[in-house]
Image (cartoon, rainbow, N blue to C red):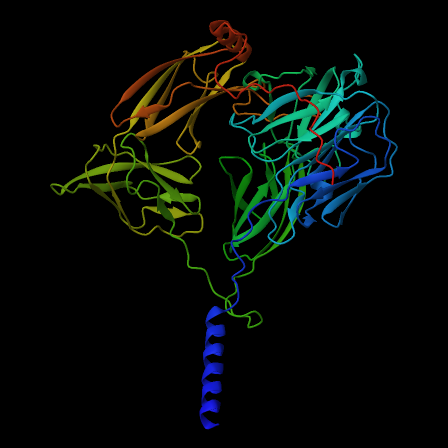
Length: 580
């Protein structure tokens, strides 16, 4: 009996251990597949459609993701449809009366995801016709950033309007107030296509429709063309037209900020450049910044911590400024501790480190300089042999900067010393001594011979590897067709030209309401590799893009441009989903 009990206890322990080792199943690999549509009621691509909705079933349970924004209905309905999850599917319902003999397309763009893992279904289309026939034509266009020429990466709503809606004397403001005939959205490559549309000609407007109301806002990025585009059965995407996107500059002149930056000093910022600003009130000195949208002001009394000034400018300013200086606080909120900012030195060097030996050796002053020493010179030491020379200093007429008139050689190491009290600012503060260490570099030069065949002057921009404009010149500034870009560091550069239609010396964006397209840009075909001590020469013929396109198409002998994507084929009716 005792042996039986021991045997049963041992058997129980073994079984328990065996069960513990087995554990629970892990559940298998993670589901990474998006939902798949397996059926619909009524069937997809149905003719003579007379329902007030449809149902799409998927192979798993799903959830909706911002359906009101991510489902595009074309032609758009007056009232947005209602989207609800029902079982393993989505029910779409509406109350609007559908137009007769019209093909409707519902595009589900990132609107459906599976319930468990949230895998988005990339795209699904449901199409039907309220008449006996189905429209099967399409219209494809691309969008590009009007400033850089690169594809517009952000999603845009694109509206199409039938040509019949325009009259000869109508103003082109239809995108501001009228409901479009068809709607779609751009992809990540800036391309879009209208599917299942009837034959005809259309005017297109693309814009960043943030509130999804299908109405162009005054400050939204937009692209449009006054030409009409024809729907077709085959669209050659390598030769498709491009709409140029830009954000309109609809700023108006206004005061942005006015504040003390220290006792006695005030900075005033405006939305647009000032023309001839005037300030009345306490006695002061003022200097307009290089961009003309910043005004630096120094009160006659440096210790004054309040001011009342009146700012007037022909650009549209007439503001009364009441300002109070407040010292910066530190520590926890409520302790009321104050911290006096350390006074900045009067003189700051703009030429330390590695600078071009061609460039001026510049100094900048924190406050305007009112007096200088009798002998305004500095010492320049060549470190390899400790030889010393003297160089004069010339103060700018506005008292805010100066130049050291020293002759340096590239690759050599120098130390420049300025003794104290060389400069005295408007408050009577003398300057401290200053030491500048620098090793000038030898830079390159680019000479560009421009053959401008446009009706407008050009602004030619030099771009670095990050597409930042590092230098620019206008053909209006040069009496000769050769533009010389001096003192360029060694590196890769690209060239971009702006057709400066308004002759303001910069690129101007488009304005839909004003009927002004963004100024055209032209990109030089080569990337330039500039080295130190090089003088590079290039020739550039800038001409109308349509002329270039015609020459390229003639060269190919195929009526199409080189490169690009494969042609878009005829849009057939979608294959009906299997019935469930």
